[in-house]
Image 1 (cartoon, rainbow, N blue to C red):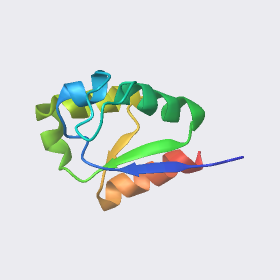
Image 2: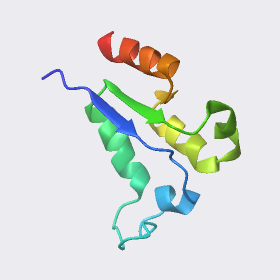
Image 3: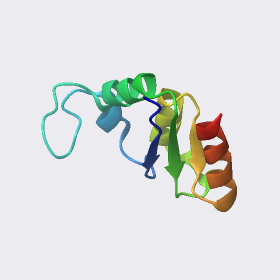
Image 4: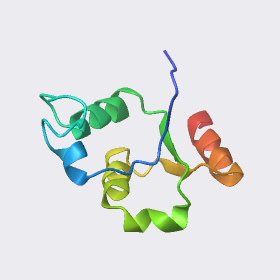
Length: 92
């Protein structure tokens, strides 16, 4: 099937919430969040992440860089231009 996945979120959190088993603030997860992001990214090649935080602020949040790497740089700003660029990627 030709599924497309769009994740919307600021990706701002403590790095351990992504990188550590048990790092979730809601429950003691057995696997790190990075494992799940990687699974999504590998299973659905047409996946993008839309980030509502202004793009010029992304470098100041370590977790944004971690997530960008996990989704193979398929993070786009939640702006008209970012939506257009993300839609082009999903359509390619």
